[in-house]
Image 1 (cartoon, rainbow, N blue to C red):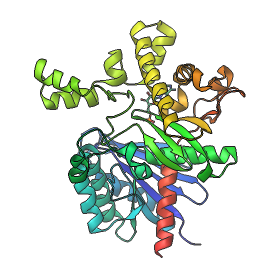
Image 2 (cartoon, rainbow, N blue to C red):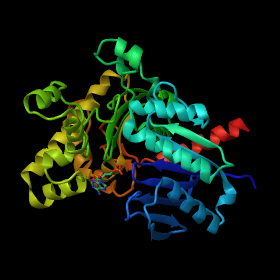
Image 3 (cartoon, rainbow, N blue to C red):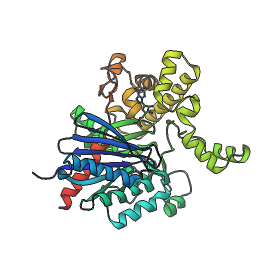
Image 4 (cartoon, rainbow, N blue to C red):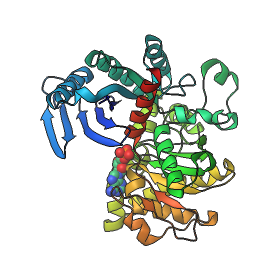
Length: 400
Ligand code: AMP
């Protein structure tokens, strides 16, 4: 039997998520995460054959050591024999990488160079590639970029209001993120509608710790809310999203914050966390709204949902028709309160959320949440790992 499984790796600064997937059948064989890497509390969790396991990784485990542990696990369970290659999620591909790409020395250099646009992500993604090359020396390594799906955006959407030379000389433009997720859920929606992907248009809202909204026309991303970095767009767990750029000068010149302070405030101390003063976790805020009638939690929810609705409504300017609106990501898939409030603000657009359908679409359930007379609204759980596995597999087959 030919080899048909792909190991998907998604490296964060202190974590390494992995999945072993058979892309042709969408079978998830193993999933797991190594967390708190580079600390004395590092541990690895795996789920295989319905059995969950957790082991602590003593001695300052890094990404390389975590990958060695994963190799050990695959060997122990004789899962290595089906492995055809490794697919890596890379956050920033700039303009150079609009397609899945086989790792070469040049590609690694490219990812490193693009770290100037995504310093928090690209370098750690590269660490994952280097560690994986050591662990799986005989296997092809493929990179799949979060920005790639948005490379179809027209100039009017990806250029900013800055002087043109910043784009020409330094690549300063909107790139967008979460592309793999937006692609997956919009493709699923087209399948649910029974319409060819190339003829259908959607607005998808990926709402998780990071949030982005994308307009997809005829299977191509035509606008998205994240920009040069994942800080742009709607309010997120700890990120402010769009603010008046003048606020930055005000914080620095008038209130005495350093540029590093402002960077930290906008990325780590704002959003749901900063407004509520409570948590970056939507569950905690929702709980305070529903059970404690907490005023600030309610305001936080209002700001969060209004900004999402406003962005969705603005994307009608990017589309010629609309087949439906999709909610995905941890919040989009689980929070009926967020979906209900977003829906209420979109009444003029012809959106009406059905309370019962909305309540039923929770905890991984997908489905239509709008009334029959409304524009279609769906909850569709995302599966970025499946897309990375499919694209990795396809590229490896093509290169054979
Ligand atoms: P993600 O980044 O897509 O994994 O989403 C993570 C976020 O989803 C968490 O920070 C929570 O805010 C949110 N989330 C997860 N489960 C729920 C839930 N049942 N209700 C509301 N929000 C949730």
